[in-house]
Every structure is written in structure tokens, then in C-alpha cells.
Length: 242
Ligand code: PGA
Image (tube, rainbow, N blue to C red; front, side, top):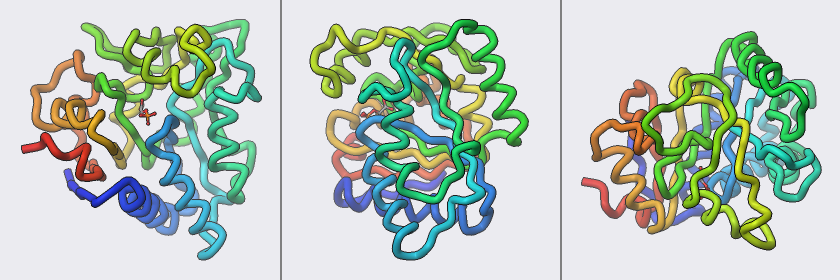
């Protein structure tokens, strides 16, 4: 486990992008796991800059998103499909057929879940996962619970997550209550994880992730078991770490 503590969000984002770019240069066919939300926005902006200025090549990169809200059309302003294309993928030379994001609208849930895991398996699993953390220790939408899912599943958002994510919607009622989420098994099987967190509101979750005991009540604490974890935090998120 490698810890990097930065002065601020911008530096965290810059370093996370440099780390990701290093993996892409080493392996142009990298299978890259993508997260959404506020945290990785700066990382994606830096990766776009690297594409524009240094010709970082995404033409063979394959991506898998962690999750998608159930009930949102792909072009809904708050869908993670839209987020990922608008904030990142439409601005680099990725091939559409290499992008995998679970659907928010579907008929046969069992089929959708099975297919997503199958596609990940066929791609050889995630090489590098960019991962944020929820204020409650969730990773993706793997929320604190007595039992966690290893595979892609339908996740119910906790009240805390619904409240946290309401800032992206016009009101809290609009936040979907369910999502399709990659399981902790798939996340932990990623060959390398780049964990990013910023701001004081994440300090407690970061402490529980790395200084606490391993518990499904804090799904991110399972990351302590991962052999190739790069943790990049701004100093506010790192302030409670021992
Ligand atoms: P945030 O969400 O980046 O919007 O704080 C992080 C997460 O829930 O993984």
C-alpha cells in the first residue's frame, strides 16, 4: 500500500491522472475501472489534458464503470453514462465499443447482471480501478451492510448516500433509490487500485478504511486486503490517519 498526501484537490487529481497514464503507457490495452461522483472529476480533466498535450492514447483502452442508477435513461443529466461521456470519454480517443457502463433501464435484471460480469471476465478483469469512497465507507454502491455482494448486483442506496448525492439533483426525491453496482469481489480483483479522496467530509471514512478493523460495515476497509493499492488523499481527507 502506497500513501500519497497532497496539499489540495488539484494536486490529488494531477497525481491520480499521472499514475493512471503510467499504466496506460505501459499497457495500451489497459482495462480501466471508472468511478463517478465529485472526486474523480479533476482526475478525468487531467487525463483529458494528457490526451490533448501528450497524445495519451485511449484507442485500445477498455473501460468498465462501477455503477449506474436504475431508472435513469442514458442521456439523463445525472446518469453515470452521461457523466462519464460528458466529463471524460467524449474528450479522448476511446472507441465506443470498448466502453462498458451498466444500463439504468432494462427488462431482464438477471440477464443484465450476468452479462456485465461476463464482459468483465472476457476482458480479463479490471487492470486498474480508479476508486473514490462514500462518506459512509461505500465503494461503488456497495453500501455498509452485514452482507456484501461479490458480483454485479442490484444495490439499494442508504439514506446517507441518497442525502449526499441529492446535491447533483434538483431535489432529494429525484435521487434514484437503486443502482446496478459492480460487486466488491470484482473491485478487489482489480490488479491495481488507485484510491482517491479529498475534503474533511471524507476524513472519518478514510480513517475507518485504513486505520480501522476490516468490516462490512465499512466496505472500503476491505481494501486493506489489497496488495496493489495506491492511496492519494488531500491533506484534509488524510487528517485523521495515524
Ligand atoms: P463523491 O462520491 O466523489 O461524489 O464524494 C464518492 C463515492 O461515493 O464514491
